[in-house]
Image (cartoon, rainbow, N blue to C red; front, side):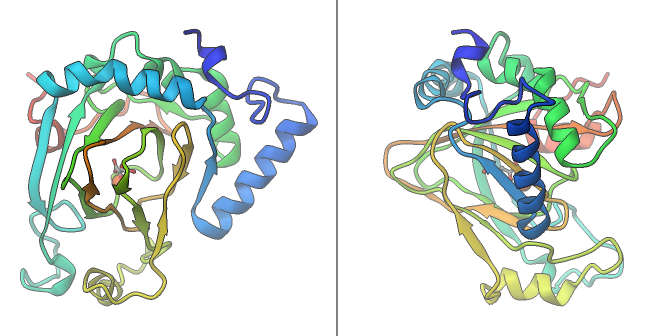
Length: 266
Ligand SMILES: O=C(O)CCC(=O)C(=O)O
Ligand SMILES: [Fe+2]
């Protein structure tokens, strides 16, 4: 399948910068980003192409993926300076999912989309950045993650300012994306607010489920989020695409080990 036949460019004309439709789409995405810290391009990848891509990754997912299973806090850090180890903002949670890394996804549709310059340019425009760049990290740049029955990604803040996901296969039940917009700022870590959310006591928490093929762009660095446990035999499969404002971005050795169980450092 070619890239163009997999994408709904009629509704989302990323290949036509300069058109009125492109300008309208940028305006819509900017205002949603402003209000919610995220926007969706619903079924940007056609349902058929999303399912084909999900199916294509199933054999490797079954045999070669890394089971990312650990107990962690919302910061994915052992300790946070200034916080007592038993502070409720450091409450531990369990995560388990299975991940295929960029170097296991050669020739995939996900990889083609990741490097598609019109998408990168569109994201930079919406986010008001001079430019965005793919990562150089052979593991972290783009991933396909699978959540089978009972698996979940627990509360966390992201490493990168924003994350792009592409749902390839939706579960029958569960696997909802829950988030609390703007819980902290660069100046205020709001540990009490974090503790309140983690205690299940934040009325501003929201839940979102999307149709397969949806491209979601999400500012996760100050918005904690999680994926609830999947229910049923049909795993949730999702691609995660990571870009930075500077070329050459890499996870550290420790981050690679923590998320992927191996490292590309010497
Ligand atoms: O699976 C998802 O929808 C979210 C993934 C995510 O939050 C992450 O990779 O940091
Ligand atoms: Fe995340």
